[in-house]
Image 1 (cartoon, rainbow, N blue to C red):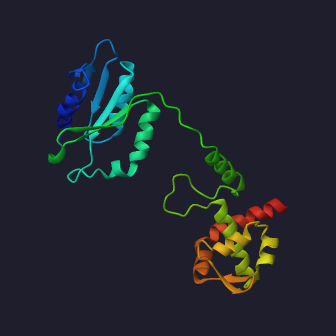
Image 2 (image 1 turned 180 degrees about the horizontal axis):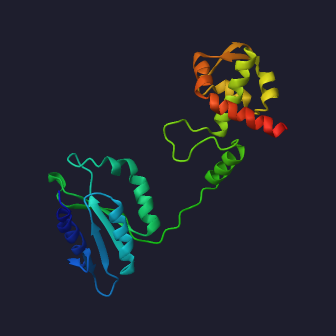
Image 3 (image 1 turned 60 degrees about the vertical axis):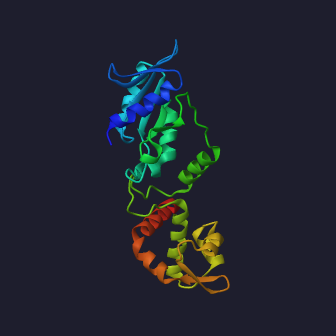
Length: 239
């Protein structure tokens, strides 16, 4: 497929809406004019790329009606990136005020154009819940145990830190009672941690008493640096 394969379907699509359409006008791939309205500009690419996005933003100097047009995913063009990031791409275009079109060029639907969003001013709704959760996690996380951008190591969240505190305590005291764990570690959600046992690190020895599972023993070694860091922070706060 070539970028030029997208042109005729786009041209027909716009002409059906009463536009006069011409290509390659002052570096714009497609320009459509209807009466005294602001011109519609469409930039073509086989797939959604950063250069296409930059082209679209640059065209705002000419018109507010700017669309990006890409080939629609198909068996021949699976476009995994598109399928995986579809919602985010739509949100990005709306945030920037760009329209987004896809062109289906397979045999069964030759030249079908789908409008995913039109150019318009966009103000995203703020999520009070997500903002609250962000600040809550920030406040409850001890220190800064992660490296920004890391994807290979597990993220040390405030919840995981609490589980690690419990893990270290149970390892030190062998079979520990839930009452003592909660009192000595100061982990208020200790009951929920042992009840849910998200990571499978604990095993119930008797009623209200817990030990380490085989996974928990491995976790002691895996997260030894994080546990030592938590213990150092705890000691520093007590001094």
